[in-house]
Length: 405
Image (cartoon, rainbow, N blue to C red; front, top):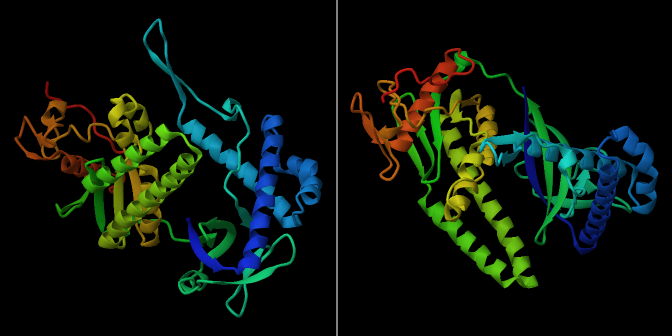
């Protein structure tokens, strides 16, 4: 299988070089907006070749882009629309029939867009060995709209990727504050996961009170407490409400910065938790997660005051980080059915939703009397589904066969 990573490389241009990079970013972003509008006006029917034939010369003339940058603009725009289409398909439009009271959903596509996608953040996509490359003296060569420049970079940790079979690809040039970065795509061929080399099966229950509850085959349980995180998220929420109430330009600018800061903080928390899990269980670990597709629909029916806490954490980002870190260590992440994982007794297998006390976060089986923390119960059931997958079942799930009325 092919594993991909995004490597972040800090570069150090001087003031003149930084100005050259900024001019290139501005031209590239404006070109992306132009191509996006053209693609929107033609109802998303044009292929890359058709866009090239129609716009290539104009991109070179009007935006002063070099040949490879003009091609990269087309690739960037089409990739962004592909991403938007994927995200829209994941969340269909839902509506309630006023006569029957039934809920229906309609799959959305790009035709639902009312305006073209805008490229607000300044960026440039640079192709490896065409627009950027490493020099023998340790510097980095970067193309600009004028002539290439040579900049220093923090390369102290790059050796592990440059000499261990990783293939470098397109780099995205970004400015964050006053610092400049290259976000470099890297890929490597890794062997497919072999179940015969499996050493651990870990069930992970994700939630709000505990971001993760991990349970393994040795009956060991670990919790990632979410109380402090929940308090911080509520502070972000309160601060945003205060700034939105002001409505001034400075408040809006600060509101944007706060949103970016919260996203970085959430990503860092997910990074720390997934790194700890991957390092704790090491080689050959199987992490079983509930398939949470569609769970957002349920949380949107919650009370408005609690909706933010229920839907704002990036569980998808958590999955992605855990997946690549586990794969690099010779393990894998599997998704299992979420049906009855919080209602089923992991000891006797009986299913009864009244066994779970949501207020006390406690579970007590009415049949065998087994009791424990409700998040731990969920992790135990998920771990059992992961064990079934490891034994050869493709789509393990619990059936309501022994329900207690």
